[in-house]
Amino acid sequence: MTLHPLPAKQLTLASGESGLVVSVYDLILANYGLDRGLDDVNAAKDFAEVKAYTPAWAEQITGVPRQHIEQIAREFADTAHKTHGRSMIILGAGVNHWYHMDMNYRGMINLLVFCGCVGQSGGGWSHYVGQEKLRPQTGWLPLAFALDWSRPPRQMNSTSYFYNHASQWRYEKLTAQELLSPLADASKFSGSLIDFNVRAERMGWLPSAPQLNVNPLTIKQQAEAAGLSPAEFTVQSLKSGDIRFAAEQPDSGKNHPRNLFIWRSNLLGSSGKGHEYMLKYLLGTDSGIQGDELGASDEVKPEEVEWQTAAIEGKLDLLVTLDFRMSSTCLFSDIVLPTATWYEKDDMNTSDMHPFIHPLSAAVDPAWEAKSDWEIYKDIAKSFSQVCVGHLGKETDVVLVPLQHDSPGELSQPFEVLDWRKGECDLIPGKTAPSISLVERDYPATWERFTSLGPLLDKLGNGGKGISWNTQSEVDFLGKLNYVKPDGPAKGRPRIDSAIDASEVILSLAPETNGQVAVKAWQALGEFTGRDHTHLALNKEDEKIRFRDIQAQPRKIISSPTWSGLESEHVSYNAGYTNVHELIPWAPSPAASSCIRTIRGCAPSAKAW
Image 1 (tube, rainbow, N blue to C red):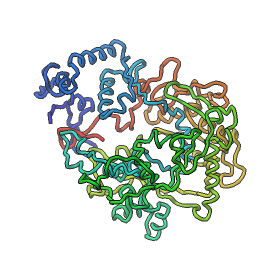
Image 2 (image 1 turned 90 degrees about the horizontal axis):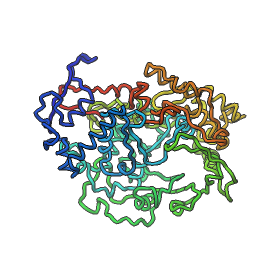
Image 3 (image 1 turned 45 degrees about the vertical axis):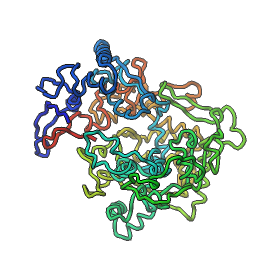
Image 4 (image 1 turned 90 degrees about the vertical axis):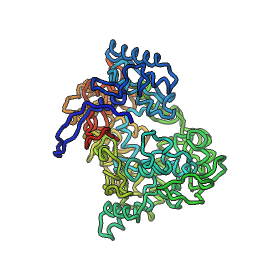
């Protein structure tokens, strides 16, 4: 390892300890091999010297002539200097889908940061991989995940989900040690790739589904019998091994999915990575897998996951697909629910390619037995509410929630990674493991809740990206606009009966489409920053976009703290603009964005996760 001196300062910390403190900027430059006037014997004398991180050194590795490297760097920086940061990098799938793309991204980000381009109009970072920007997301989230009735929701990342349950890990011959830097301690990275996913789940870095090897609806009853709270019982049982994470035993027969609903995706035969594994292990049909399982050879097997010689095939009991095409996924499905096309339903659309919110309006009725997406799920909710009676009632669900970004939990494991399973630390929910939450479910009331706006928005408000605001006036407005439920479990709550009702909920709750909410959102952010940001939306405070408005004409959205750019007639949208010009700390949180790291014990390097 090549060491470079750092311009660190010795400070007395709040704990009374003494520590060396250095800026992240200085840490980064230490990896550039620059002397910086610190008499660095390991720094190169000039760019032509073949020494770590010089253009001449890079030429030997990449084959790119050092003159070209210097030319691009100087021209990019010179343009940024003369135009006050108007040098831009546009990138997307061309880089995004390549190996080591994370390091390529960091290189480009550093180039922009060092040249002062981030947050400047005409400069900075323009990232495009697809038109998937959900602009009114803070209005959509409570509707999509039922946050108006119960929190927190159960969510899962699809990469981990299918890698595990489609048994792709049983064929994984690439080891973590093959991906390591030559400077890393390989002994700390033994096992298979699935092991790291399991460790991440139990340390609270990733979600999991199913979460535990027991029914989470039964934990409360067991805890009461043991004289413990559900959270205490879960912690105790995880530490003793009486309860385990389901991902550790994927072939046990009770830790895999049984039902799968696919909507707006052609998973099988198109978008799914590892299609052949899904056919064999999820559907139990002909697959075309050409490789051999690890069990057929002497390959390295997982350490955290129990290996069973005979893997379960055909894990799914039911596969349901909603589509208006007879896609390849439909051909594999048990049930296909025909849904309406673009011109047969009411819906909304946004993109990262323009700042408008667009409607989809029903010009004709859906063909034959087809229904809109909203009506299909509403019917499923109604049927489920009827058939669950006698099996499921009002239940207490124990939900594990991973550490969230834009929250204090993101800083809960500084400096080093400790695994409670290995005895390196205690199991502390929300710190060294997922948080443990109790969620009250009322299964027979599923349809009533699906078709109404719940009380948690009145009680807890709404928000996103670490800030929140009061939504009482918006809830009252929706009650007058959509009317309220006359009776039943949701009596008095605003109705969400149709797709237009659902659209009105999103439009009313989102700061991007409701100027009054935008002002409240900027006020909420100002409470953290100590600055007034409301001037960014005050001129739009009386603007409240309704579904009929966007039917008449697509409308431009309102600037919101959910995004780091502005929607303005004077400033083109640019990521990071408000961070720079409004002095808003960078994500993940104000504490993490101070660009300061403490090097405990005068260690030669610092680690940040």
